[in-house]
Length: 573
Image (cartoon, rainbow, N blue to C red; front, side, top):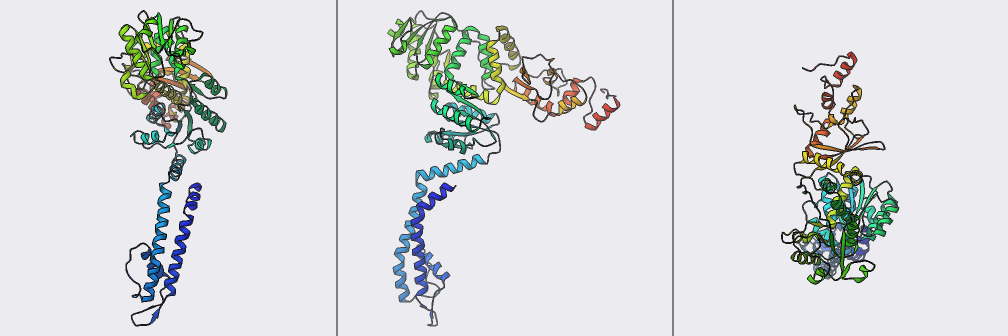
C-alpha cells in the first residue's frame, strides 16, 4: 500500500499542484472583482460562492451566474479564467487516466489486492509456485480435498486464463516469478495458515530456489519440489526438502514394477488414482528386447529400468553423443521406418517413444505399429493439449507417460496423506504375496472404482469415543472402528487400513485385532462413505462402545458415570 501511495503522489504531484494553483487564483479573482446586486449596490462574492462557480466553470457544466448576474468586468474575468481551468482539469484527468492505464501501476495494484487476500486467509492453504498443467491439476485436487491454495506463475497470459476457469476463479493468484523472496512472503510463506510450499515450475533452478528460500525462512514448513535433473534433485534433498518428485524417475520405477511385479504396480496405481475413476486393469508387460527412441533424461531412465528388470534393449537417438559408450545403438530420429527396422523393431516385444517432441513420439508409435502390430508401446507426452492424440484408438498406446499428471498425482498424495509415501515405499520392498493380499482386499471393497485415501489422526478432536472407552476401561480395536455402527447387520465398512502408526512404530495392513488408542494415526483406503462413518463413530461417545461391549452403554455422561459407580451395566433390551 505504501508503494501505491508513493507512486501515485509522485506521478500526480505536478498535475495536482497546477490544478490547485489555477483553482486558488480563480477563486481569489472572483472574490476580488466586485459585482452589483439587484438593488444596484456593489457586492463581492463569498468564497463558497466563488469556489462553487469556479467548479461548475472548470467542469464546463455552467449552471449560471451566482448570486447575481455578472457585470461586464466579472464576465471578462470569467472569460480569462475559462481556458486555464479547463486545461488544468484536462491535464489532471489525463494524468490520472495515464496512471491507472500504466501497466506497472496496474501490476502494483494487482499485487496489493493479492497480498491483501492472502493476508485475510484463515483456512489451511498450500502455496503453489508454477501454475501450469501440473500446478493446475494439483490445485484442483487440493481444493476438492478441502484445502485452499495460493498460486504464483511468471506467465501473465497463463494466470489470466486460469482466472476464467470456474474451479479457480476465487483462488488468489499472481503473475510474478516465484524465485523472488519478497513475493513468496507476499504469497503467504510466513502466514501461520500455510501448510506447505509446492514448487512445480518447468524450470528446475527456479524450483531449487523456491525450496531453499522456503526452508531457510520456514524450516518447519513442508516443501515439495519438482526436479528432472539428478544434480538438482540431490541438491534439494541435501538441505531437507521434504519430497523431491522426478516424474521420469517415478515412471521408470513404475515401469520396473510392471515388468517384475504386476500386482505391486497395479495396487500402487489404484492408491494414487483420482478417487471415483475407473480402476486400471492388470497390465502384463512382455519380456524380451525393447527399442528405446530418445536417450535424453527420460529415455536414459527407461533403459536403467529395463536393465534392472533383466530386459535387453536397443537405443535410437539422432544425437550420436548420447549414444557414446552404449552397445547396440542406432543413430536416427526413430520416425523413419528404416531406422526402426535397423533397430530391430520387427523382432522386439516393446517400444518406448521417449523423445522430447510429442509429434515425433506420435510418429514413432504409428510407424512402429505398421512394422510390428504386436508391440507393447510406451509413449511420452509433454503437452496436455495432445491428450486426445495420445488417447486415440488408432495410436493404441499401452502406457502413456504424462509428466505433469505424474507430478500432480504424486504431490497431491504426499501433501494430503503423509503416510501414503511410507506405505508405497514399503509396498515396493515387500514380497509379492503382500501385494496380492492387498489387491484382493481392495477388489472386494472398491467395485472397480478408485479409492479415496485418507489419514485418521487420533491426536485431533473430536475423540469422544476413545475417551469414553478409557473411562469404561474398554479396549477398542480396529475391528470396532471399521464396523458400520449404524447398521443393524454385521457390516464391515468398505475400507482397508493400510498403516497403523503409534509413536515410532508402524504396522502395515494391521489385523482387525489391533487395539487403537488416542495418539495413533491410521491410513485408510476405501470408499468416501466409510470415512464419514469412521469420523462419525469417533465423534460419538456411544456408537463404538455400544458395539465393543456386551451391554448397552448409556448415552449420557451422567448415565455412564452412574453405571460405573454402581458397577451394574444396563443390560440390552
